[in-house]
Image (cartoon, rainbow, N blue to C red; front, top):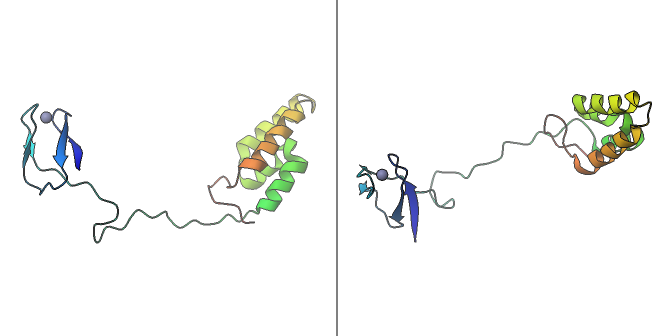
Amino acid sequence: MSFFFQCPYCSTKLEIRDDYNGSEIVCQNCGWRGTVPRPVTSGAQPGVAPAQNPAVVPSDKSLTAYILLGIFLGSLGIHDFYAGYTTNGIIKLLITFLTCSFGGVISAIWAIVDVCTVRKDANGRPFVS
Ligand SMILES: [Zn+2]
């Protein structure tokens, strides 16, 4: 087993043996000498906790309401306004109104896609069920 370290000087990939003991190594390409930080092995190092996701704060918006708004009022972008996607809501509204509700079909299809795929509000917080 070995790992690769990129020479800070010439960017040559230097192969480091897995039992590397922290002593100085020499780049064969440019002659750079230095020590190499060992790669972090899978959580084996004491005191180094694996990266944790920050606590997920749930949305104050309900998924059920979002879906119902999307199905019944989706062509007006109401579900977007509800979830905070104001820009998307305005675009749907404009599509619907500027085409004398002709384009409402487009907005409605877009809304159905939204309710099938969007599970977070505009702040990235998951909807509550
Ligand atoms: Zn080098």
